[in-house]
Length: 483
Image (cartoon, rainbow, N blue to C red):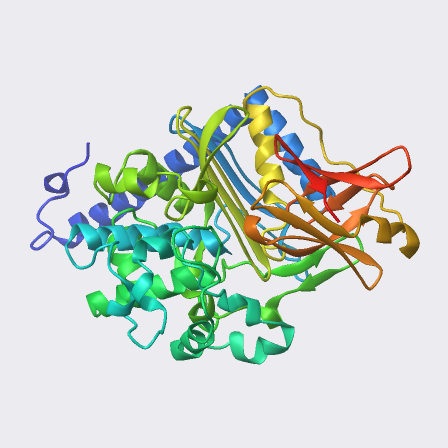
């Protein structure tokens, strides 16, 4: 090992000694760079020679080919990266490819970071999850019955402020906004239900948690995230994009990518003050992997706080995570979607498997849950199919009218099918599915693009629609038509 005393006295050495020292330091740096390069090559070769890696890569190549995945993926198990690769373009107009350093907005995965900061502040005695909201927002008429725990678990019933953001609002939301603009929107609405009895996903819950973090610490939400999470975990490529960061690694976001055009979402890119504690963070696959490993090893928070965060409540939601299972294996996962970017993080707790998917295309979490499901099928040696070209058909309005109605999964969960401008729309308010178009493959099967699911309608002998069957991930759910 080279040591400083091998180079002589740098303060008092002669010119020849200094030149020798400089030369040796340059050679040492070159040697280090060569070692790093060789290590990267060996890791890449190891990935390429792994049959599971080859299948994962083959699937993502097919997803990219059919415009289902344009971004970066990282898949790891037991601390070993099985696949870290990027697909498609970071900037189509300039033919700049995505790479492993590309930065994407992660949308609602941000909620995990917000929840972690809240739990850390509870450990420090600065707040309690049992606190009523009127302690922080006495001006909100209904705050006395809502707790911070209700906000974390999406059981507050508070109106979702992002429902009010449309395309015509881009002149506002693409610039820094006053936070009072958001609180004025959500505080004028009565909660949809008594707090604690129902689950209703609402970005407003986590927006308010961000404001509470600022109130109790006297520091910005962003600085709290940096101090508590980013800096300790060395997440050096994670950031908040206020009126566009100069970082050239940030990908251009696209609303649509197909064979003939790529429609940018740049003109509708929300400023970080808009998505804020509900969805503002930008990051890379490598940084999110550091975060996933921190969850696995229970860093940042105490064991009790992690147990509290990852306890499934209504609709399998914890504090910033969905706790569920896939192919019989326990998962903690969350997606993210915001104009131009989609993201998905899934961690299999028992198998120590991490799947990270970040893309610069999409509109509010379209498709990545199914891609995660297929990658999981490959890992667990379950049947799967590569992407193929989908063909949709146009059905006459008289035919489409037969599907209109309410379909019940149980007494509390309903699916509504409506017909608007010649297109069937599906909505499941209690399940968190906004009104979304259905695309017909035939008179029985429809495609729900927003979550990449197959929706099957069942007819009786007389041709009347009697059931709706949802095929999503590895789950099948049947809903009976009631009217």
